[in-house]
Length: 411
Image (tube, rainbow, N blue to C red; front, side, top):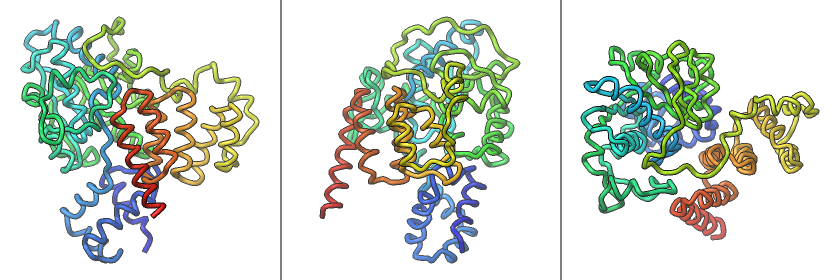
């Protein structure tokens, strides 16, 4: 029987759109668990229907954490400013409630805590709830010990303030861990956090990109239910276009990707100060946000090509000719017709890299590696990008992967 039933099951359980990571990635996860259970496809399918534990194991295999401390630091700086300027000063008795969803292995919620503590917010004034569907990720988060891959920011001064040396890496101090409370949950569960108190701040970044449009709308509705009056929702840079159609308006904080409900817009914040947070890597704002701006309209109107008809080689030639936005549109059309692939994600990464959008480029390179872990071009370009950002430790890890891959291919 077709593997499509496993894709449908994961979409029902997680909201995961197979097209977002590729059917081959789901096939690999199913094969890994099927072999671990010593079953054929039909046997594993039947076992999966009656074993909640095995369903969780399959989810763990599909979910691939990709996070680090102070990822997109402007969002954390904005959060700290909002907390101090708009809420705590006006209500000295207020307990700030924050949600990190999904929290993965804990880097995001712990970064929230560090950002608030560094901004002078006392630990007893805020509570951070951190929720994830992965029990393995939550176990690592609760442990609070992290290796060098979690430290990719150019400025690592926060590590000296909030960590101590430990076997296997660095251990978070209790002052950072105390306000963070981890829990297991799934935003696709109809009973997810029903009856929960509302939150002043919600971080839900780089989750919606893995859903199809109807599921994205359902997820945003859940976030809207959990967000309190005047609260702020932070999303990933590639998810900003989903918010206005769902009743949210930009909080108008540069590079923070922050939104409020459209009917709850206070005066915009003034220019952000320079709190003791890691600096963002140099680069321009993400190209996808700029793409619909009027400056590109003449090119869109005049573009003679029909992207849906181009092959990947055609799209490479278009990109090489300098018309990178036409190539990017062609890549999106190619994926609509043919589904995602490592080659198309790699090309999108190269296009965004050439345009100076390091965040989007890294995201596409990692998606290429998700589908093809041994892809030498994706490994090499991502390593170069990380070096440009000052993440030499992350680049060395990729170099080592390339050496191992080369040894296996040549052996």
